[in-house]
Length: 302
Image (tube, rainbow, N blue to C red; front, top):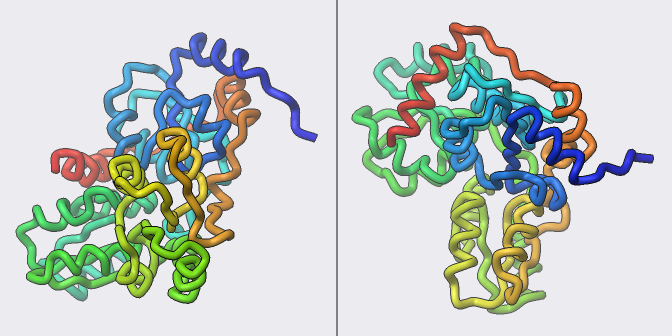
């Protein structure tokens, strides 16, 4: 049985440590509610860069906490659950990137932030699902090596036909599972309701959606839309934020299994323990930080 945590204890520790709590939109509702900032990976990257706190408690997965450490190496970055990983990030290695460079000399390597610090260190520029089109469009190179997400890379390629894309064969298991059949079934259950999906979904799902965007873009679209109901094709944690921002609207998940098990590892207890015991610190090689910071800085400048 999990120990009960008083929210005030977390807040007291946060003040004592001069800490800030960042939570991704895929976290449990109670973890989102305790956070100082809730957002997608791009928004949280900016918060990590701009905060004056000494300690960053990153409620997400390890590549996100690594990104915060790369951007703010002088700060202590804590990941409450040390085994909260990312299957997509595990699919690509620095060696994969170097091999692609040899096969495609002159191509620019665009690295989705859902990747390790080491992969970021051997890439030219990073991107998120929010800014991927803008980032790739800013590059002078006509040939683009896009790692690791083939689905996001395919989505970006639709908007930049003048560029040639070499797509790495990675994917997000949670988003990749959505099928056209799933869409047809949910449309039948909720006729006329717009479907909003994440670009990590497979191309045929994206092609049939009413709107495609990052988690933050999906939220913005739902908030500003005149529609009263939406079908959401991304991790189920986003529904909590949507319902808070739009209490008068109704939201349905496109698939009952739209749950990222790694994102759901973080609990209030692990946030408390992170602050209480100052665990688990993100430690990166100085050279990796220096090299990866270049690709992240290029992204943030765009």
